[in-house]
Amino acid sequence: MPRTPSTTPTAPLFQALSLGAGVQSSALLLLSAHGVLPKLDYAAFADPGWERPETYAALDRLEREVANPAGIPIVRLSAGDIRHDALDPHSRFSTMPLFVKNKDGSRGMLRRQCTSTYKIKVLLAEARRRLGAEQLPEGRVGRTKRGLFLEQWVGISTDEIHRAKDSGVSYARNIFPLLDLGMSRTDCENYLAKHGFSAVSRSACVGCPYTSDKGWRTLRDGHPEQWQQAVEFDRAIRAGSARANANGIPLRGQAYLHPSLKPLDEAPIDPPRVDRKFRHLRLVDTSERWEGDPDGCSPWACRSGSSIAREPGQAQPLGRAA
Image 1: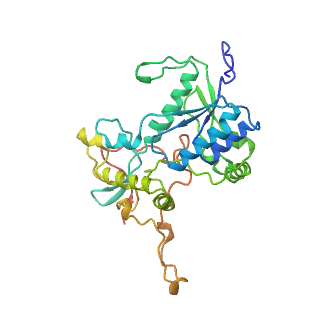
Image 2: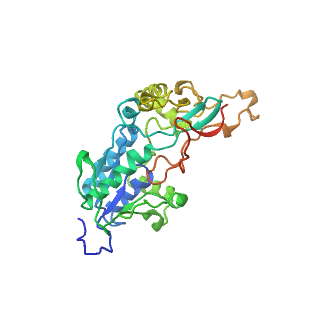
C-alpha cells in the first residue's frame, strides 16, 4: 500500500520496479518477493508491442509464480505497437536506430527515439498517475504535486555500474538495489537459477537493430514466425518510416536492420566456415562480427548515447560501408 503523504514528503510514496523480464530486473522481483528487499508496490513492464516470444513467456511466468503469490501487481503499459507504427503513414513514429547506407556510400545510424517513446514515457506517466496526477484527455497524465515522489528500482548490477543513470525527473527517483547488495550479473543469474529461473533472456524487440548475429540466428532457428516478421519489416523500412515519407521527408539513403547493409535474410549472421585444413590460420577478422547490444534494451541505460542533430533524413555517420 502507498505511504500516507505528509505536507512535505521526505519518503517515497511507492516502491516501483522497472521490469523488463531480463536477468537483473527479474532478480529484483524475486528478491522483493522473498523478503530480501522491501516489498514492491508494483512492477511496471513497458511493452513496445513487438518483444521477443521468450520475453513475454518469462513475464507471464514471473507474474504467475512470483508476483501474484507475493501480492506484487505487474502493470503492463503500452504506447502502441512499434512495428505497426513504423509502417503506418498515419501513425506517429519515433525512430529506431536503423543502420543507413548514405548516398555517398558511408554507413550511418538513425537516432534512437523508440526507447523514450515506448518505454520511458509510459513508465513516467504511470508514476505520475500513481502519485495522483490529473487524468487528461486521450489517456494523458498531468503533473504531480510538488514534493511527491516514488522510488523506481532499476536492474543495474555491479559489473555495469557505468549504466546507472538518473531518471531526469524529481517525482520518479531511480535507485539501484543490486549495487547496494553488491550483486553482479552472474550473482543474479545464480540467484534466479537457484529458484528455478535459469536461462533468462535479455529484453529487446524482435526487430531491434542492436540484435547480435547470434541473436538473429536464435530468432531464425527457434522462432521462424518472428524471424519472417523481422525479414519483412527490414524490407519495408528500406526508405525509412512511412510517416516521414508521407510527409515529404524521405530518408537520404537506405535503412537496414543489420550493419552489413544487406537485407536481413541475406546478411552474414552465420559464423564463417573454415576448412579443417586451414584451421590454424586466422582467415576471418573476428572484430568485424556484429556483437549487438550486450545489455539488451533498458529504458534507463540506452546504449545509443546522446542524440546528434542532423539534417532531416540524414543518419549519424559510423564509417564507410564494407
